[in-house]
Amino acid sequence: MSVGIGRERQFEIYVGGARGTYPAVPVAFERLEQAARKAMSPEGYAYVAGGAGTEETMPANRAAFERWRIVPRMLRDVSVRATATEVLGTALPSPFVLCPIGVLEMAHRHADVAVARAAATEGIPFVFSNQASRPMEEAALAMGDAPRWFQLYWSTSNELVASLVSRAERCGCSAIVLTLDTTVLGWRIRDLDLAYLPFLRGKGIAQYTSDPVFLDALQETLREESPPTGRITLAAIGTLLGQAGSYPGSRLANVRSGLARAAVRRFVETYSRPSLSWDDLAFLRERTRLPILLKGILHPADAVAAVEHGMDGIVVSNHGGRQVDGAIATMDALPAVVEAVGGRVPVVLDSGVRSGADVFRALALGASGVGLGRPYVWGLAAGGEDGVREVIRNLRADFDLTMGLAGVASVRDIGADNVTRV
Ligand SMILES: Cc1cc2nc3c(=O)[nH]c(=O)nc-3n(C[C@H](O)[C@H](O)[C@H](O)COP(=O)(O)O)c2cc1C
Image (cartoon, rainbow, N blue to C red):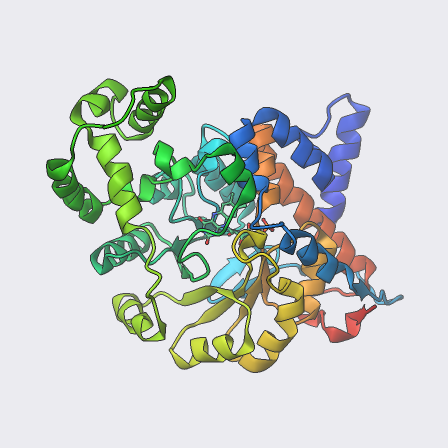
């Protein structure tokens, strides 16, 4: 008989210890982050760890979770626990997905492919980022039949939007997550102090440089491209080489052709469309039969508008505090969004999820599932594919045990009665 993922993982670790083997990455979030920091460049660490402005929203996300306390129930036969659920037709063995995270090459050289493999082994859906370090086709290939979604940024080119969506369909993605909260980049103080933006170094633009529509447009940019101007500094040469190294093909050929530099320029011109409005959604709705979730919703009226515009799901997210400093914490926004949506579409929550208790609390307030963000990036930096797999397994285990110890045998039975606000 299965003992459940919680006990299985505990024993794996404790029995391992008795034999002298230890987990690949720390279990505690803070120690995991420290281990990742040691493995990363200062710029890479700052990019992942940082938030917008005074970085007030990151602790606010945590504080909002902590205001909700679980009230365990006793004597409820929790010997068999059903942690699996489903969101928009995608099966979730535990109620979470891996959030779309751009520029994973700053955490590990195998980047998205390592995460894809780890996610696939556990059957946890991976949401491919529009700012990935590897083309979605590569990540999909590493996943077999395991579930995945695609996260879209709406660029200035609708043709590119359509192309990315049809590639995602061909890659076996079973939902599109349209991120709305990053029409421009937030005021990210750590990156500003280091004067570092990965995209300008050619990192995190692999979905573009592998796209036929983007590549066509790139030829035009290349024709207009003038040679670099200004003083030639060591840093400028380093940037040029970095861009060329990130672009597909040989570094030398990329320096000679000017393609890598032109690709960065074209990306900057293409990325994001701040004019995007509700009426634009019809274009996307017509392009795909896949379910579409809107990510970045925090106001109940926007949640209602999403449903009215034919969207299939909502991701309550403040982008991990990276966009609007002082934004409402997602656990504070969730109840009103859930109420406004009234069960018409599923609501997923991310930003600040660090433990099984967090997953449980979000579900208790009506979320259908949650998104795991920074923790798996730290796992990737500290331990590569194995590190990500352990982070996933640990969260699955922690959630399973939390649910059982709270006296709930099935995800479907988690409800408002299981928590109280303090
Ligand atoms: C380094 C980094 C890169 C991210 N890149 C993307 C992205 O490309 N697309 C997107 O929709 N969200 C992106 N996000 C936001 C995540 O999807 C998610 O909303 C956030 O990480 C949740 O907060 P948490 O990591 O504190 O839990 C990124 C977050 C981080 C930390």
